[in-house]
Figure 1 (cartoon, helix red, strand yellow):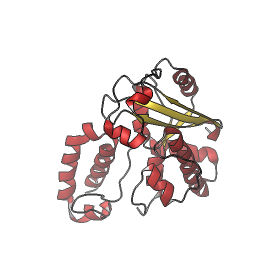
Figure 2 (figure 1 turned 135 degrees about the horizontal axis):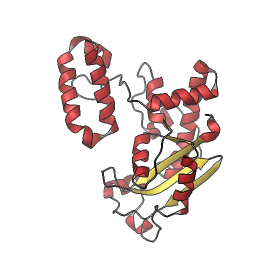
Figure 3 (figure 1 turned 180 degrees about the horizontal axis):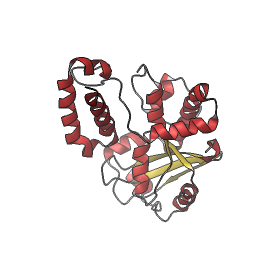
Length: 244
């Protein structure tokens, strides 16, 4: 697989709940950019509007995504084995699944950025934070618009790609490694919460296994509500507990 098969994509949605749907989608494929607003089958929540600035009035006269030309084009692109590149990709994959689009090949720049930050020097891994932390040069980008985020996403991907090229020296191998990292949960490095906030997980595992057991129990209770973030922590806590 090579870079010509990459499709950079972002969605804006009605919210983050189990019944929410996309209301805007943008993607870039083979140097062409596409963006569209769509009328979702559920109302856009105020919290979502405060981030995307997309209102229910703005989409009331738009076509639904299912049945749209953009959806059919994406179905064709993904059926041909192309690779989705997204940030926190599982969220976008789930939203597309609700529109009857199944994605098999995924590169998640959130997971790649985290995996490459071996010393946990980056405080946060959300897309806009990484844009400024890594000083990515991007012009005329509106944050939290789907197309704006796609442009940031592409720049972030290229930065991560070049970093991995210094190790693997082969574009196809880098793509394969990115797919591999994206397909599995993350091994979290540092606690961003709780009594060990800021501490490395590997160090806490040496001194307080009781805390790890307690936290694992709490994460298992909330995994259905919190999704992929909880999956990463469950994987991490189980990993360190199995070492003992």
